[in-house]
Image (tube, rainbow, N blue to C red):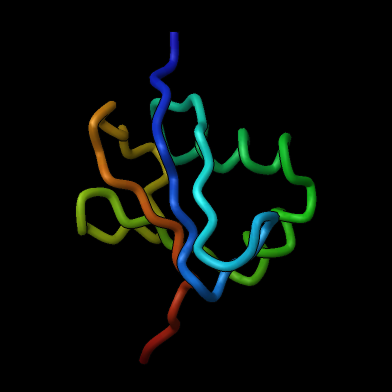
Length: 84
């Protein structure tokens, strides 16, 4: 059974409900979170293709989508910022 969490989008990402929307999602890992959002909102795949990072309780994850998400975590999706 996967945990249910509230996920917020940064103001620069938008699916429905305007910038900064929040969604209830069932997921235990970042990978499950992304798959759930793509299933629910197919247009989210375009955002993933451009790059999305996940903030879990203030810690940013860009590549390790196997990371577990605690049930009580504060989760934000933000555009991925490339640096060099």
